[in-house]
Amino acid sequence: MPCRQLSPDGKAFLFFNYMQRMTLPKINISKKWLMITAGSFVVIIGILLWLDKVVMPAWVHSQPVLKMPNLIGMNSREAIAELSRMKFAVAAADTRPDEKYPKDIVLYQNPFAGEEVKEGRKVFITISSGKEIMQLPNFIGMNTRDAKIKLQNIGLTVGDITFANSESVPEDNIIQQTPAVGSRVSLDARVSLVVSGGQEKPMVIIPSLVGKTLAEAQTNLQTLHLVFGTISYEKNHAVLPSTILNQQPPSGDSVKEGSSINLTVAKDD
Image (tube, rainbow, N blue to C red; front, side, top):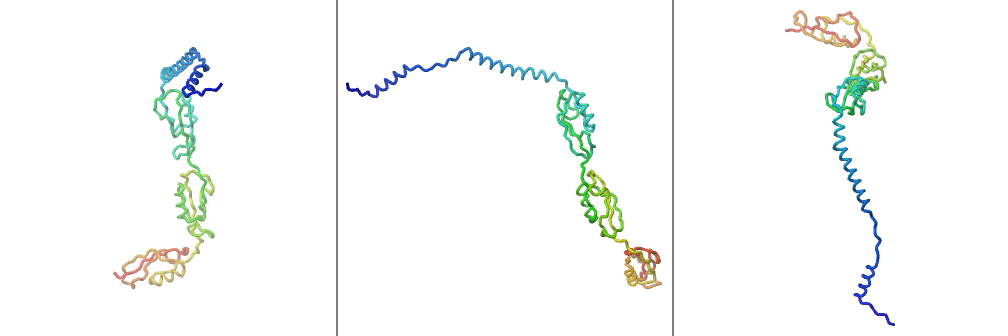
């Protein structure tokens, strides 16, 4: 028997009829469990709101209000003991060097002194570790001017400066320093210096210059490695101008080479 060819409308009818006969699986969700889940969610939200709006504010307001003490300048142990006595908690205790406050003294606090805070509040304090310490560098052999500049640049103070002759250290260079090289000192320490005056100069006898001219006196002094000091002029018609009337130190005194001789010289008017 020959098969009949279905029209497009016929194919659509058969497909629709097939879909109607199919039975899809049913999801069996109990209404009871849905209600329980929803109810639990509402209860949890209610509890959280109650804690936030009622319990926590009530607990906060029930804490005593205290005035924060002034801890600045107190020894750190005494400050921590005072905070514990007042039922505060030390949240953090940092340290830093300080030029004003000695070691173990409180130099900062938060909350600040006088603030009204709740009992149990955490308090942050900073404790002084004392003056900043450094290792003293070597200044020996340096020129005096350079040594002073370096001392000031690193925050140290120039102390006493004395002079001494040295056969090995050139004149105006540092022979000795106090404290010694490598000493650990605070930044405000005073450093005293001994400066070389060069090799010790030999002693010479001052010649008599009275009655000589300035040119003659200069020649005599140069021979002995002496120099002119202060030259003052005085009217005197008994001698020629530029004649030396007086000298200090006087002739016959012993002085070191390089010393200066002060002169009084005659003038016309």
